[in-house]
Length: 119
Image 1 (cartoon, rainbow, N blue to C red):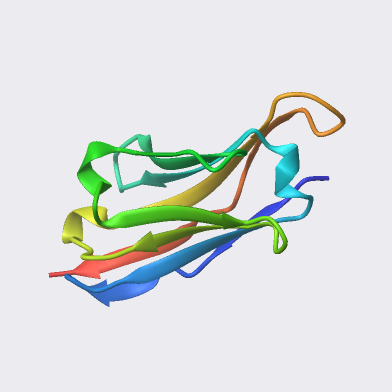
Image 2: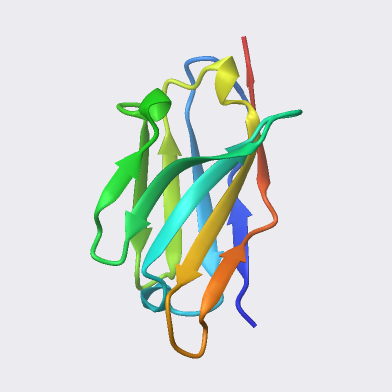
């Protein structure tokens, strides 16, 4: 069974930084893309950043220049470095992975990690 476990969330003041981690129970090479999403109270879950198997990245406009997604294939981990945090970044952050084929075919979500940015 594929599991994704996030960590690294917490309470930080505006302007501060956090680094989120998402550890997969299988090789992340099994996935064609891994993403970070976030969901604020009363809002929908929105895509924040994506990294492909080849290392290509994409970001939602509101985090460009502040957030960086990266991965470590040896540790089977994807990171989200978040700098210059704003109160609007407060949300539960989720990791998602997609396996397009093979024995692990499907989409997988982690349990989420809370990020709270105080003003």
